[in-house]
Length: 348
Image (cartoon, rainbow, N blue to C red):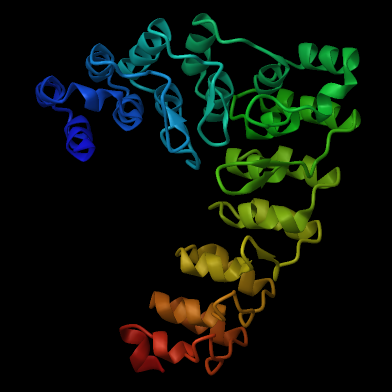
């Protein structure tokens, strides 16, 4: 039944939403619809849900309505100015009880930090006008050098502390997409000078996120290189670096000694994962730089198995040219030939 309400919300059918809620008012108290209406930035739907008992601070799969409005796509590389209706919805949420001090989103953080991580100034301004607190972590994320340095000098222990949700001040600098990038880099340098850990980990939902992950995700190359220069593990930085369209981050990690054949999270070779998810430019770069196409994952699949299963002729030829073994068997006894698709069968 909630799926029917979600469908009406996604279709923008306010009359249908009202009709559904009138017949099933208890459905408004489920967290999913209110979070979905927040993601859509739909003030009128939120008002209808609230009228029928919705909790504006309810959480669904790590998000609350306010955080879902701010962060539609946590891994998006760009940013855009939101339409006025979305800004009005943010104002309405704050005026009607949405609490900006609660944590949610990716990574779990208070709303003002999430806004800084999007880099969208109107979100930041409205949250501040709506009463969101500006503590040390927010100060760092907003690039306020003077106040950040004063706070560090006054209480050096802050550099190793964590905000609600578990994020460090250095991670806040690295994750921020605010325009003041040089200020963010200066604060990060001050934090590192005071002993901040460039390899600190923070749990996302099911993953441990390092500081270089945040710098790569925010597209802040100077921050990324600063972290590597100051002791961040280049090999641990490589997975997030190779996921970006720009290879500058991966090149920087490699210059700092990253291991191209590193296995990360559940024993997954980076090259294999890039091929699996269709990141062909980055996979070809790794092969060019000397990545081994014969390293198996926990299923016994190598990059050759992955290339065969994707059916991309260019990738298939590249892994073989790099020394890929087309006769190697996986844990079930299958060679890459068993996974060949379409035109690749003719090439084999």
